[in-house]
Amino acid sequence: MKLPKSKKDRILIFSVAGVVSVVVIYVAIMWGLLPVLDSKQNLEKSLDEQQEKLKKARRELDYAPGVQKDFEDVTAQIEKIKRENVSRPILGSYLVGVSEQIESSARTMGVKVDEIREIGVVDLPIKAKDSALKAFKLYAVQVSAAGSYQALTRFLMQMEERNPFFGITDLQLTGQPDKPEEQRLSVQMEWPIENAANAKEAGR
Amino acid sequence: MHINLIYKDEQRSASPVSLWLMARVAMGSGLFLIIFWIFMFTMGYRSLMHQVAALDSEWKYTDPKYKAALQLRNELAIRSATLKALQGWRDARIAWGGQLDSLTGIVPEVIQLSEIHATHTVVVSNNIPARVFEVKLSGHTSADRSEVNVLQFLDGFKTKPFSQFVESAVLPSGAFRQDPVVKSDRIFEIDCKYFPRPIE
Image (tube, rainbow over all chains, first blue to last red; front, side):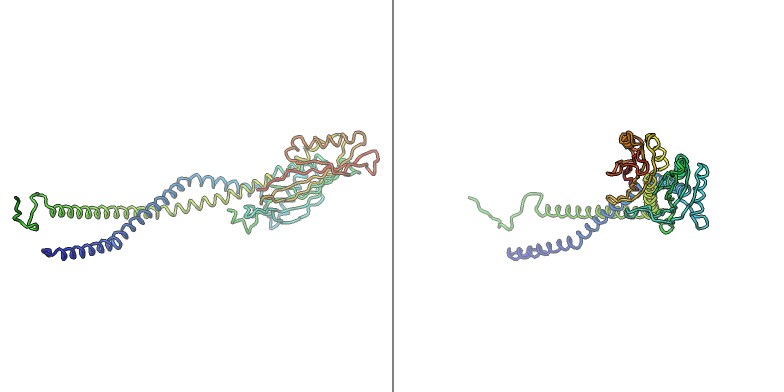
């Protein structure tokens, strides 16, 4: 194909060819190259994210044996507390087990127990939001007893040593003018018990 | 004299490298570069797709284990919080047996205690509940050196083990007076406030 002889015609042809070339290049870039580049960029991004996710997962899996060991240790400690320190009902009653403990210690220490009055199940005085202790409640009794100061002291010490979760919230020790060797003790005792409704949440 | 026997548009370059040849070489090189770039791009793209597919496959294998590990960590956090709270609860108590036993060591021989009354309240500060114990001690002593005896008793609360527990031990105003029954004796009351013991 020969170009026209006229300079004007040649300029016209080159102009048209230039415009067509620009349009073709524009279309190729906008609808061909850029989407492909975008797609590759997205793929690279996805690859980076996936790698990051896997790296995090691998790190977590590396820690898993240690976490498992800690979990078993913590669970064992909680189970030990539940087994040894949290009161359990005997035939639906906490009073039976609690009375046995009190009377056994009192007998050993030479304290005369006059009355064990059930106060019942009370909430723990927890105000913190979402406290982990909401899985527990307290079982409280009011005990009246009499004995020498030393006997009453040893009685309370034994109760407290037996169970570090046992608590005394109110205590009144009164001397008796007619019997100076004997004191009267009125004490509110509390034991933790499981709150069945929340036990599952606390990681039972 | 110079006579041009050839028209301008009939003039040809004597150079062996013509403009047209250079243009063709440039176009050829450009085309080659474009094809080479497309080839490299396609290879890179395919390699990326393979890597993504491999990672996807690995993720499918890892994901259940990862979720189980996260679940375990979550369970550990819950149980640790429970254990910590239980230990906090345990540590918040006051062993009254020990306190009563230690009390005998600081009561002067000339003082006779008639009543010990310990009460307990829960106060919340900064959303942290704490147990606060207060003890009221009532007693009497002979009038002779009664002030010295009672002050000596009060000083006992500043010694161990009470100094670790008792925030303040004071004689409230009007709490030191004549015994209405035995006129030669003095009766007194002491209010002890224990340090708050945070529960959690």
